[in-house]
Length: 283
Image 1 (cartoon, rainbow, N blue to C red):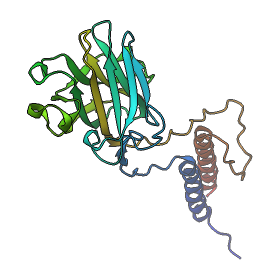
Image 2: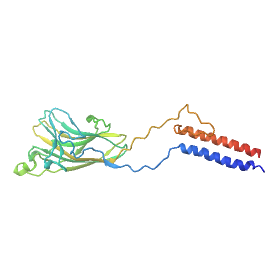
Image 3: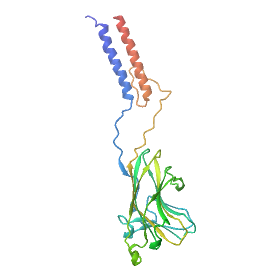
Image 4: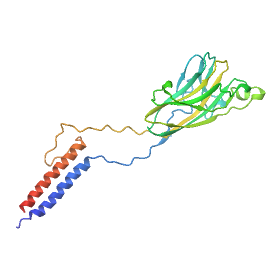
């Protein structure tokens, strides 16, 4: 029987080794798939203040004040002071002995870095002041962000004013010339997350002067709409310095790093080419 020509043997061998080596390199590499769009959602928990009505501060929220006054937090159920549902968060200040007294609620939420979130707050500000003395800047409401996400009031670098109408605290049950139904006003804004993976939203009421007038701040239906943070990526495994390449015909285990898989494939390609060239020379 006539022997097969070495060149005819060498070409399939060469192609087979090349494909095997390249296959080993590609199988070890990561597969890049287009990710699904990030889900938009409300980052605020219990923004309607309906959960845990027995507490003074609604579930998911915490309280802050700067002292030297009477401060109160309550679950408001009077329909005149509720935007939707059955409850809102009420904050009150009176009997203050110092100016610029602050009462606040706050919540820390996870966010996606370098993303814009849209904030919406429904709020109501009302006091015992006479009609002629209202809306003169004695009281105010603001919102602000602690970008460290630590819930630290003093890390808020900028407060955004909420331009609210100062209403009579008792609404339609006031004097005949001041008996108006209470109403909520809608405040909107945007939050740039920067490098933060979590932020703290503060909503505060301010009583600027030490007077005996009581002021109430009601907050309801708070939303912070933006993408839901994706799960943290798996840790990258660094190539091991003591890994050993398999012998001829061996298969790299799943635990062998990608870098070693690539090197092993290239070595096999080189060895195969050398063997094929040797066969060609014999021919």
